Amino acid sequence: MDVFVIKGSKPLRGKVRISGSKNAVLPIMAATLLTSDISEIDNVPNLRDVHTMTKLLTRLGASIDFSKNRLTIDTRRVRTFEAPYELVRTMRASVLVMGPLLARFRKARVSLPGGCAIGARPIDIHLKGFAALGADIKLDGGYVDIRGRHSPKRSVRLPFPSVGATENLMMYAAALPHKTVLRNAAREPEITDLANFLASAGASVRGAGSDTIEIVGSRKLKGSRHSVIPDRIEAGTFAVAAAMTLGDLALTHARADHLESVLDKLEEAGARVDRNADEIRVSANRRTRPITLTTMPYPGFPTDMQAQFMAMMAVGDGTGVITETVFENRFLHAAELTRMGADISLEGRVAVVKGVRRLKGAPVTASDLRASAALVLAGLVAEGKSEVRRVYHIDRGYESMEVKLRSVGADIIRKAE
Ligand code: UD1
Picture 1 (tube, helix red, strand yellow):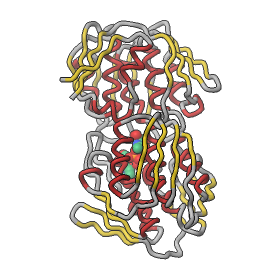
Picture 2 (cartoon, rainbow, N blue to C red):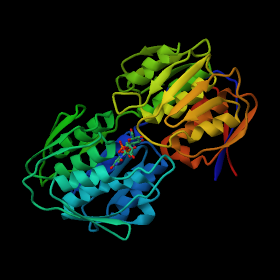
Picture 3 (cartoon, protein in one colour):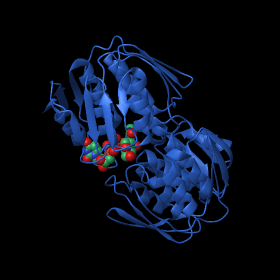
Picture 4 (spheres, protein in one colour):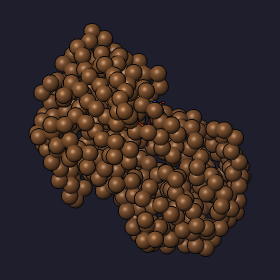
């Protein structure tokens, strides 16, 4: 298992190229199962989660080539409708094959993902949505067995705008040859990217990005070409790195319009943010001011940026408050930050972060993807040496993070433990 060794205290300066979005490419990869054809996807980040989805699609019978950030996926020989436990358990987003497999085979057998570090994360909203569209669902030996039936019911209201459930239902609806309406749908930019992919494959999709999505599907979707949107969470993470280290970073190939709530909070905290067409520039010249933030579904403040902001507030000037409403148990990084000298108290879903002048380098252990990013950020400003263990969490969602950080002046290396 790899470890990052970081020596802190350097302001980061320069340009960072933002990669394609992890959370956009995973559903799009699953959506290729709706076709019996070849699809080409560009701007694909080279990440562990992308390799895991590649393994799963290959297991189902797809042939996949992944080189130079382009995926070519041939789904003509997909024959299997079972997503096995050993793959689903390593990545929760594997459940996104359920909608496409159900559409293709009228049945699917998908392992339940099980718990993960940031909460119970059930898939009940996905299953209720499929059931509302007429599917029969049975749970059997840790697996969901689902069968499609013709149903007059063509509209679903989600009890919560779950990102994954919205995507799963959109993909299923894209193969139903009539209009399906999803209400209280998630509005994340990744939903719009999936909608654009489905449209280029031949479905008619209206309203993605709003809370009501209307889809008129087709049984004859074709392979298509698509370029994935930039990763707003990677961009947000580097933006925080610029602010925390009192540096100045230009994030190229990034979209400010996908990051409004994050950039607004950075400005509130005193950073300077310039939003340009294809680039975001963030700089700071003093410790950040205290802020209050509450995570919410898009366009609210993203839960995937909460840990990084906690690291920033840990070295800010004054006391800030974070409320996490999207996931239970998503403060695992707080204890590790405390080991580096942060002053954080937790009360249920609320964290009170009292800024300290300096963190101290320490060995810390990453618990999940964004928590690990927060520990790296803390390491960048801590006095002395930090070691972040379980870097595989970072590799799930950040393409060459240490290489990008080094290119803008950070002292960070990867070593095998
Ligand atoms: C996606 C993102 C993840 C992000 C999250 C919220 C991907 C691959 N992952 O995850 O990075 O943190 O959105 O923005 O895109 N829930 C239920 N039942 C369900 C589904 C969800 O109770 O059937 C709960 C979850 O436990 C969680 C909340 O709803 O508390 C949000 O989950 P959801 O929006 O579905 O997130 P994911 O799609 O899993």
